[in-house]
Image (cartoon, rainbow, N blue to C red; front, side):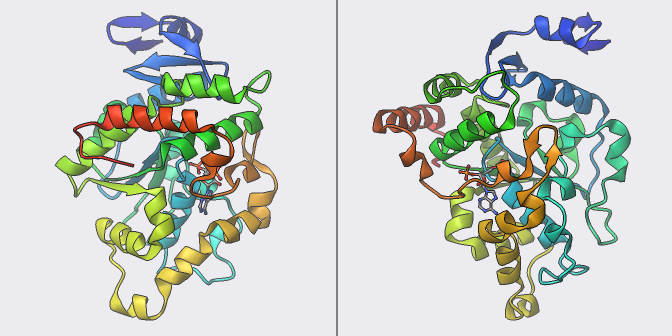
Length: 319
Ligand code: A3P
């Protein structure tokens, strides 16, 4: 049985049927839970980890809205944290043989028995690196007390276009969704862990209040100034890039190893399925800033910009 607020439910179906529902983009329906919309499979996973996950002091959580560049930053985090034991130029680097999602799992996709076996850092600190899409208000409580959070967001229009393509590749729908339908649903907040604006704002506010706890990053900054962002990230995680490392070109090596060109050309990322029906290559489409212009009309672009302006008004945030 599961308990939500004061009610006790006896099966996942029973629980879902008690929640508000609307059409979904990635799966046919999405369900509203604690103020956000989720794909049904993802929602059950979140409830599981809310109940069972216990964060630790050295944990690192990379949180994103789907299609904001999670795969990229998972790779960067992994390469950065493990740089001493495994140089980014090492021909046996794990990122050359495993997908970033294998090396840095999504917290909510793990069974409770797997939490302790996550060991994706080579140092003695027992650092665990997890990905997640959970909104800040729904994170397992212990994450607010222990560990550090890196939040990555991306231009909303590019995120939507990326999501639209991904939804039709992932085969979780009985039939493809049209761009117009997906767009309307996205504006209504019906993307996993949406409304996307609310998810971003939650982490933005926390990053202002607790800058040692939450680092707020943008995909476009990573594209424009990867060195600056890498240094920022390393500093935030308490593993600053040293002068010697700078002089030896380590940041360049990490950036190159994790670049779209390198990653998308690796055999492991071109073939196979790591997650259910999702092919590994679905995580690498074009990686281009402003790609939305190829798919959205000017009106659609303005509508998303307008919504972003309204939602972020007064927060000091613009993306
Ligand atoms: P596009 O669909 O716009 O190309 P996520 O990892 O959160 O699922 O996001 C996927 C998006 O990040 C896709 O965007 C994908 O192409 C892009 N991406 C994946 N790896 C990348 C990398 N190494 N550098 C830049 N962008 C990358």
